[in-house]
Length: 194
Image (cartoon, rainbow, N blue to C red; front, side, top):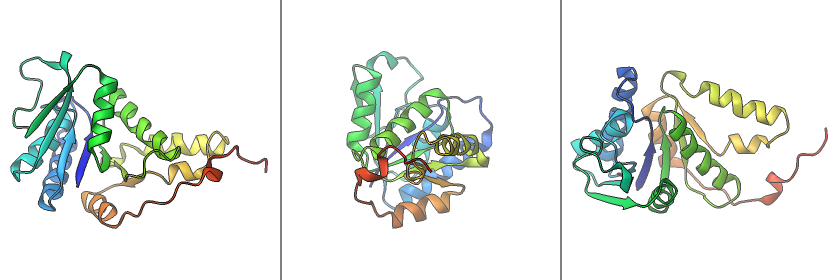
């Protein structure tokens, strides 16, 4: 399975995040999966790429042409696809991927995650979507999503479209057992007054 991994491009983050992401990538590669990612050599993008590279797995980087700067891109990609814009980059990653894992990151990582969960909510994607919740990093996001539900801005079902995983083993189990559900527009209609 081609798995798209989103995550931070910062090397300034705590080392534990990098180690856990690289460990997950090695485990995924051991199961025969390949990587689709943003092409970066640093942060959690780089950690994911190094993990897959250790096992000789396929690694597809997708980068906008303006990222063509020495030292920024992971040098051992099986294939590097260049796009004109960030928007076309995301579309290409979505087209190539069969599953998505979001590791801790900043605004760009959140933007990528929210696009995929929006597509799932609208029935435009049925691919698995995981938040790798290292050290509870995504707990505030879970609370934010629940706040949206509590305020009737979205249905509870939207939160159920993403799986929060605290461990690499749980990520693997979820991907191994994932069963896509049929899209039902009734789950997304305006919520009834209680």
